Image 1 (cartoon, helix red, strand yellow):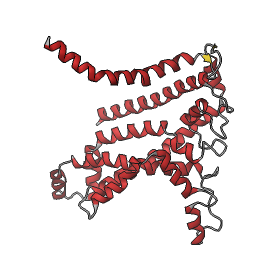
Image 2 (tube, rainbow, N blue to C red):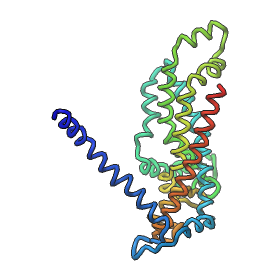
Image 3 (tube, one colour):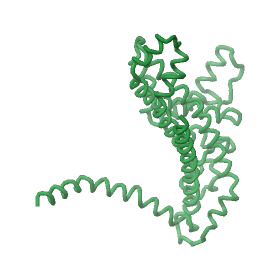
Length: 300
């Protein structure tokens, strides 16, 4: 009897989480799986069309352009954020003055809302009266400012904003890994004549390997799925230059100003198919990296 009461007591705590998972997790996925095969715009009757949505994806140049933009965006973010995070972690792991304050400052962007962060950067990078262009003009660095959100620089701008928001989180993970490396290892290598660069190459990086693999995996997934700051900064423009997969998907479900993805009409059926294909792409990239990292571990 006591076991039954204890079990009922335990399940009563699990029930709210289970209900939330069912309503907010499993049901929407099942709903999307169903409407992948329907022509449904959010109103009227859903019409079964089989695989027509997927054949439409194959012909949808805008979607595939967004896939290319996603890889450019993710690649730029990874190439900048991972080394910068590791460098900051290595610096802030040393006994320097004010390191606790610096850690808090670099971590602060992580706790700021992405939308709020993007609005702040929009005021900085605004091409007409942005803070950065005013600074460049005032000090005669540029005569008329730079079109930061224009076709030529928009992708670089959104990548820099994404890096600013991601560095603090990855820095903290690297910092935790660095603090788990015993000091005795560095002291022994110093006695053997190893310099700082050699210690970093042959001690720090190998012993930081598991953390590095985890950080890269998180960074890949977050970069491939990210779109919020881009939506605020450019809405995918100009002319689709910064439109990434999940922003394109968002526009299919929730059309926004200037959207060409859905011609200002909700596309729930087609959007569900795009969501499935996008999830498959992200999953395939993650599996490729996971397989490659396991192969590297075997080689080591």
